[in-house]
Each structure stands twice: as structure tokens, then as C-alpha cells.
Length: 138
Image (cartoon, rainbow, N blue to C red; front, side, top):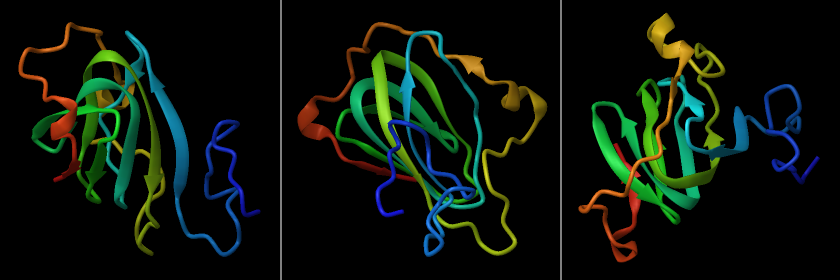
């Protein structure tokens, strides 16, 4: 398999090409009151935001994101979607897991695993203009 149709289903370790060591690739859409969970991975994860606006958390920091931004999350760092200002859509990519690593979404406790609703709120007055977009690296 050379083409992954992530619009149909995400790529997982169970259906990736034999030569591929990527853990996961897929799409996500966050609508008002969607549920999301603060989680981490044993490998880096990247989100390319291609539609919408939101506030995300990476570790102890929060960031405003919008179409064109890439959120880069290091291995072991919790990340979350805090709130949205418009429906958000994106693409995620999870790097290979080290030999001793675990695959999938990992949680520090049961409360984080249950997730939370993501509210749709008015865009803050300090939300950056599109000219200030960039890559978020934590």
C-alpha cells in the first residue's frame, strides 16, 4: 500500500505498509462540545491545522492555532484542545515509537482518559492575525 486514504479511516500499526514504522496518521474534526482527552504518546505527534481556530495546550503552555499552523508535541508531553473559536479540522501524524514505547493515546489518570467537552467561545481579542501564523514547538 502506497496511498493511505485517511478520509476513509486512519492508518494504524495494524494496517500500515510493511516498510512503514509510523504509528498513526489520520484526520480529526472538532465541533462545538466535541469530547477530547488530555493525553500523551511515547513518540512525537504533529497536528497540521487546516481549518478553524482554537486554543491548544502542549505541556503547561497554551497556544492559539489556526489554519496553516503545525502543533509539534514531543514524546511524553501531554496535549489537549482547550476551546475552539471556529470548528477545527486537522491532520495528525505520530512518529515511530521507540522499542520500549507504548502505542496509542496514554493518560496520566482516569479523569484525563474520560475527556471533556470542548466549548465554542467567541474569538479572543488577542487572537493573532493570519500573518503571525507559524509552527508551534514545545
